[in-house]
Length: 122
Image (cartoon, rainbow, N blue to C red; front, top):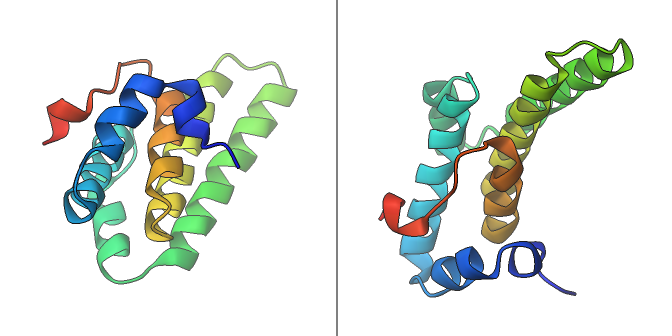
């Protein structure tokens, strides 16, 4: 199966893939927490949930964000874009909790309009 990150952003994928496994997880965590802050989420809550195996709560938060996004989109509200970004950022948290690091970083590409550079998080 083709890696979504590799096919959508090969430069980011190569930089991320070149990291040692332990560094890769640390960098992915830093990127996720940065993106959560960037979209107006609570990175302290996310960090706590990640540290104490709060997978179910992260999945519930992601589902809440997605539900809000779809509700606003359906009503044609301009805030739907912001909620799309929040949903993607929280979805990245779920991937990170499952240690699917490439997918976590892939989701973050859509969570923020700011470019993600692996070197910024080393």
